[in-house]
Length: 158
Image (tube, one colour):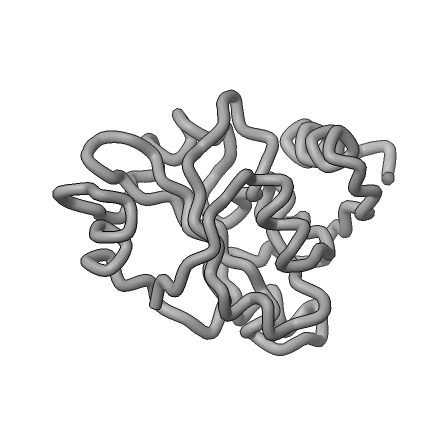
């Protein structure tokens, strides 16, 4: 790992190691606030980007890891988690529950575990890329590892 890694990315790397995953944190030249910008920099399909989206589900955080090729259907997700309403979280809500900024939210490294759904479409890709706590950092992983490290539930979310 580079010496000057952002503290959020260091926490993500530590969380990955705690699960026995030795994935290297990659520092991108430019920020990657969207799946399209991340895919362009990594030279992969947009569907291989695992967007970490935080939603407000009845005032509780919900992390949905979805393929960059998908849009999350919040009505479908509400039904899956038994929430009355699921809506996009504010930047303040995201940072409060993850300690990370929008555009860099990782699947792990949060102050406390966040209930997680993992898009089954990510399983179509041998390698999946996820943010590592900062808009300039990512790591390579797999669908199975995402389920393992988040304790998430496999779901069709789009």
